[in-house]
Amino acid sequence: MIRNNSSSINYRFQGKITTRSTINAAAGEVLLGIHQSSSEQKVYNVVLKQAALVKKKQSQSQDDDVKPDMVIPGTLTLLNQAYDRCREVCAEYAKTFYLGTLLMTHERRKAIWAIYVWCRRTDELVDGPNASHITPMALDRWESRLEDLFQGRPYDMLDAALSDTVGKFPVDIQPFKDMIEGMRLDLKKSRYKNFDELYLYCYYVAGTVGLMSVPVMGIAPESQATTESVYNAALALGIANQLTNILRDVGEDARRGRVYLPQEELAQAGLSDEDIFAGKVTDEWRNFMKNQITRARMFFDEAEKGVTQLSSASRWPVWASLLLYRQILDEIEANDYDNFTKRAYVSKAKKLTALPLAYVRSLVGPSNISHNLITN
Image (tube, rainbow, N blue to C red; front, side, top):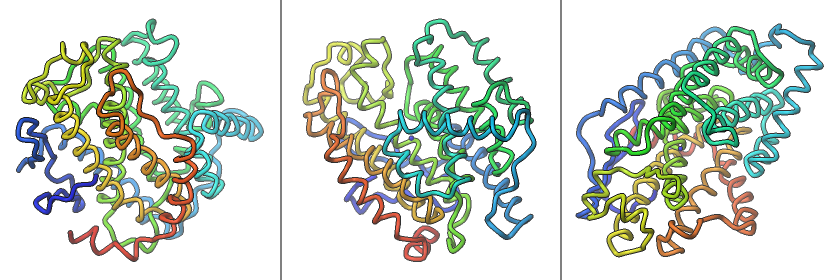
């Protein structure tokens, strides 16, 4: 969950979260803040905690091997069946990403499948067929269940796969808890005052996935980038993906009475919720959308800097995801910014084209750009 040709834009990660971009919709320019927002600081604290956990693991062992299977309830056969089920779910619902995971080492791809399935199950609590029956208390129970599986006490076979994963890799529980917090927001909040609020929401529901995944995917041994900068890039990809989801689904969300767009920026563009519900593509809407797409592309650009720092076997699925999601923004533009009645999607032909391109990019390692990631 970032392309811009303006030489005045200087938005980079240097081992910490730097200035967050906001959009001045009226002027049509990207403006940069000069201080770290409260949302950014909150997210950065999670980044530091996860990075510290990874460094601790690295200091304990210089090799990149994962720990042996932890002892959890159930037999090894049942655990293998649990991972097989996670594989099946990932293959069914995230086909392109799944293909990329097949290049990863056996242990890493199993772990990524387990994380994907937990995230999907969490999302479906508030966005699935039984969403209308979900209460805050149900999410509290889900969080308690999460804490148990982190302690090696899984409730079912899918929990067992994640419990095994977090026992092998330096994965912190906080991003998982934060994703549940994002689900709580969906139960009680359908408007976001400004981008600072929306940024935190995007972190909760998507940026967290990057923080969960990097410890499993691993950082290339030859990388000279700081651990924090790689995690910030992973965070940026999650933010970019979620912003893209929001822009793609404006019409669908509006029909559910939801507007996931910064209210202040809508007002600056001369727009309101009523305009969203009316679903008319006007010049004001086009200008507003151009600025929102610019911001999303900026986050994608920041994410690109970190993908090359990942271990070589883990880059392809991330590149594939990044390239395909960026194309959704292109499709919104191709639809003349009509995301009220038209759903922007990437055709199968374009997906097939993206896969080899993603593979070629995955061959480029950190030695070629590590200096830029650190010093730019």
